[in-house]
Image (tube, rainbow, N blue to C red; front, top):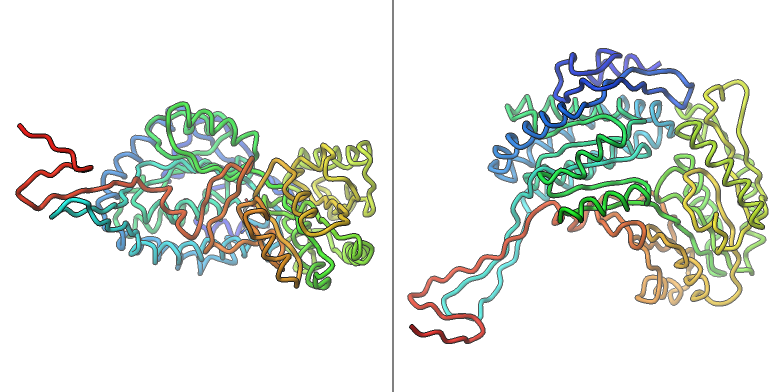
Length: 509
Ligand code: UN1
């Protein structure tokens, strides 16, 4: 089904490992990658052993010694070529993402578009790694700060964005002069191999060391080598809050830096002044897009009682029109969950909702029969709940949408929205300026992302991406997120013939 695409992406064998001669070392155990679309095994992939990991680190360090001396705009040129290549491979890589991960082809290509966008951003950035000039308090002195490369950056990414999240990190890290070791989700190794292959070809073309971009494949232990390695000054990890807590503690114990992008529990507030037509599209896409497996997926709608019944009715109508099935077919809105374990979590959550007092108004459930043989297809569900239920407080990575009613003013809705442990993305649908500004104010949303009149998912790469509280506090992608990938240095230069001390201190010998 995907053979042609794999060939175009330079993946020639279906048993992948060190024998392919590419620059990930793999002599460990084999894992298979199977598609949640049809349950078919796509390929067997050999994981990295601990010795492979050590070899990779040597290679990465050697490459770093060279790469950090390449002028930043020339590093940007490498990323420009990478972005151009991605442009031509967008349909092919998008299809692999869709088939290996299960998101719709549209969204698979959207993910590749995010890669292209971050490359464009990084190319511009490569000429703008600005520090500031600071006026010294001492005569004939000059101060400035500058940003230097940091070293080898470890990137741990999740299955749900198997290519874009790596690209956000890698495009920035590379123009910053760092090199990358990537540990992708073991559920989507082929997407990772394809990406690595594309970048490796460009490095080769530019006669640069392969070790600028490295790939290690495997389960949790492989990630642990990275996290505990004192040679890696920065770990950027995307995934569950549980994973992030472990990573944070281990990296902090060795005083390394981490960028954490963890779970969300994202809500849209729908006020009496909302444009309800826009609201329905934003809420439904946010809740069922990527089958509810984005960290920015809409989990909760906090709806004013005056529009509650109307919103509920239009959601039920919209959900009845959703087509669930093969994500590669353009008519389908919702594809499968990543695997049967995810299905089990989803089913558990449905029964918990009822146990805890919630009411399923769109019941959901597992789909069986023709087209659903992989056992990974579920129906998106909607439940009326209260915000304090344990199940509502958790992030269930599946298409389950919670409706919560509020009676008072927008401050009541904001309090409900903030009353969860996570703090990634949030939105308000309103045409009322006061409500919108309150939502964005210091007493408003406590999330890293707060939107007016759009949904919670689908952030553009230009902004810094990440969230507060149990979302981990990290920022990736646009704005000045690049600063986390560099080390800052403050420089003071004395061009006088005296040595005046700061703070007016006199020290005479
Ligand atoms: C994620 O779900 O881990 O905002 C990333 C969005 C995408 C990225 C999500 N641009 O939904």
